[in-house]
Amino acid sequence: MSNHLRRVLVTGGAGFLGSHICERLVEQGHDVVCLDNFFTSQKQNIAHLLAKPNFELIRHDVTLPIWLEVDQIYNMACPASPVHYQYNPIKTTKTSVVGSINMLGLAKRVGAKILQASTSEVYGDPDVHPQPETYRGNVNPIGVRACYDEGKRCAETLFFDYHRSNRVNVRVVRIFNTFGPRMHPYDGRVVSNFIVQALRGENLTVYGDGSQTRSFCYVDDLVEGIIRMMNSPDPPEGTIGPVNLGNPGEFTIRQLAELVIELIGSKGRVVEMELPADDPTQRRPDITLAKRYLDWAPTVELREGLVRTIDYFRALDLSRFRPPTDHTAHKSGESAS
Ligand code: NAD
Ligand code: UDP
Image 1 (cartoon, rainbow, N blue to C red):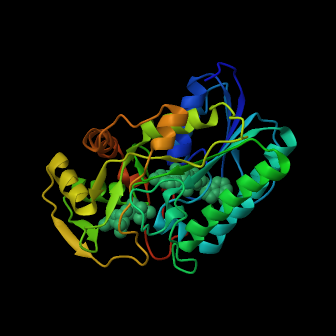
Image 2 (tube, rainbow, N blue to C red):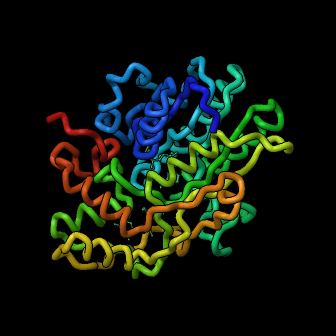
């Protein structure tokens, strides 16, 4: 990576992944602008950065245009867990589609390089395994996950059309399930759910029979891959990607539950609950391209990543977070108390 210091915009910068990206870029000396509407995150994630001279926070919604002079944009803004993105599905699609149009328009005007946080969800419930970038996916366009999946697919279309039509310098990464410190304790994702349940001695809620698989990447590995992708040199054909980023280690959800119980020494046990609609049965990244283009591969095993994440959750004051209810707006706000 070049050592040039840059002005960098991170949309969704207060979120789980965004806050780690901001932190890494601030450490590297870049001027970082974090933009977030705090729909699924809390200021606590970036509180330690607020006093840094090279960090700035803007409360803004990416579905509205904004003008900023920056050299690079990491477009991370979008609710990412099924509970969050299904709360207001139309807004989720708008965030991906209108948000991408606004950020691509900004990139075009100021000549910034822009990276899109796409997702393994573009593959839907895959019938090719593991998933290479050439696989075009199996998404239900009218299902409950479509607001996220199709929104992200349309965002990819926009990125490549802005590249072809307007020569915007784009990078697209397809992120597979990532976990680690600063996940929201009530975001409903499987790793955070299982750890919170196990720490409380509650039963771990496996949806379906737990035979569905996921591949879990530790956040530090993922952030390294994202930053390498942003700073990867331009090939003669104009751009690279999309590129899968994730850990190819594949586990059933039941295996994950049993590992969390073992690591915490919890008295909770596995209970089965109804499987949500369109829940993908298997998922595992083919990371050949990431290795070739970025010389990147994950280094943190699931067990080690879980130990670090459990330490984070153990130290977290859960009373500061509102538990989910049927009526709270995004079920994830920071408690006022
Ligand atoms: P997150 O919910 O913690 O972070 C998303 C951030 O975006 C939050 O801070 C939220 O407040 C903000 N946001 C949402 N809508 C916004 C809007 N309209 N305007 C401005 N800010 C908005 O989730 P995350 O796990 O950090 O995910 C970050 C990105 O990575 C998302 O785009 C997600 O789709 C993508 N991704 C994440 C994973 C994963 O496993 N964590 C996997 C695939 C893709
Ligand atoms: N899951 C589960 N129990 C939970 C939360 C999730 O069994 O408490 C399952 C879910 O049905 C899915 C997998 O774990 O099969 C991953 O779910 P998550 O919401 O973390 O991510 P995604 O489905 O988007 O990959």
